[in-house]
Amino acid sequence: MLEHYLTQLELQVLPQATHEHFTLVRYEPGATICAQGDDAHHLHFLVKGKIRVAHTSATGKRLVLSFKRPFDLIGDIEYVRRTPYLNTVEAVTSVEMLVIRFDDLARHAADDVAWLHYLLEEITRKFELKSQSMSFNLFYPVDVRLASYLLSMTPDERALGSTVDELTDIADLIGTSYRHVNRTLKRFVEQGLIERDRRSIAIIDRAGLIAVAGESIYE
Image 1 (tube, rainbow, N blue to C red):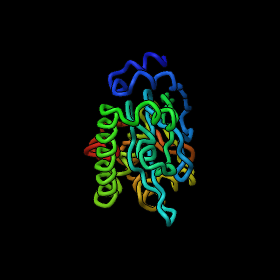
Image 2 (cartoon, one colour; image 1 turned 180 degrees about the vertical axis):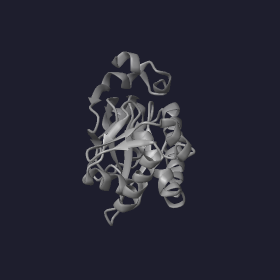
Image 3 (tube, rainbow, N blue to C red; image 1 turned 90 degrees about the vertical axis):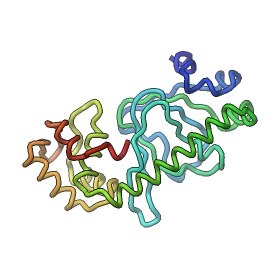
Image 4 (cartoon, rainbow, N blue to C red; image 1 turned 135 degrees about the horizontal axis):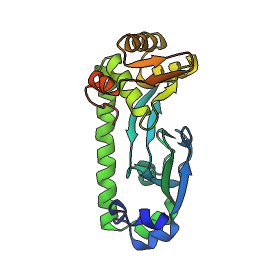
């Protein structure tokens, strides 16, 4: 599988000499891939699955920045600036990533024009997406944000947790209050979009939720 992923088109920008330094790492759903503030030493290429990227402000408020699919990069900004991880990244589904140490990448690709051009494009795209995601959290109503979040968190399974702690977590991540999330979920139940008990939320009308979201604002 390692060789298969290394031959994917998006990875051809890397010099051949870097390939022997890659390892294939797997993560289970819910696993933390990197945590905001931790020292960064590795670049991750997402090659299978789906991940969630969130940021915690100085006041402790968290916001979802995006959900990512193959072949996105994690650690590219940190690689260039040699800073701790800017965001927390978690696996939503089972995830596979190609991982390489910064030092190994720099030793073989620091002056490679194709790689540097690719890296510049990726970082520029990320800053554009981050700006958009912050605007979404400011301008989109809670029902749109919540519908989009529920859709993004259930790509393979139709259910997710509904305990008080988990709803508080959702509220923090989409930038609203627990009570507002609770009220909106009740309305979704009344509209026949979801079913809910004390432990789980089940999506029963995915098309209806997509209509509420209008567009997938987190992806």
